[in-house]
Amino acid sequence: MTVYSKYLPMDTAMRIWDVMFRDGEKFIFEAALGYFKMHQAQLLQVSVCPRSPFVSHRPPFFLLLSQMEFEDLFLFLKAAPDNLPESQLFQCIGAMSVSDKQYEDVLQRATAIPDA
Image (tube, rainbow, N blue to C red; front, side, top):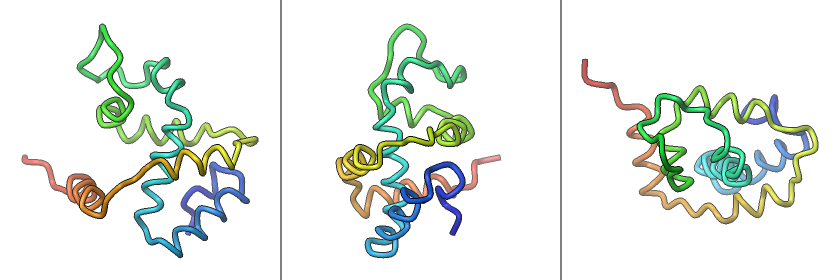
């Protein structure tokens, strides 16, 4: 139950938990996408994924997220400001419409064992 509680203001984390209990675990994923969407300008300006294959152009937001390492995304979330505008965050989360199929596909890829 510590998801987001360490890096987001407690009121915001509690609101995320409330919605997660109402809507299900997929909301935790949508909250992360919303947070990254809210900060997309920073993500697109800062080169936090030197392992990415693109150099000369900036990819669309979701392509960028798919190319970033999990650790880089975690470090970005960890740097959340204390004065995070909650209403803006929840507007961005609301814009993240992830179907159950899309969520299941992401989970399956995230938990797949790579070929040795």
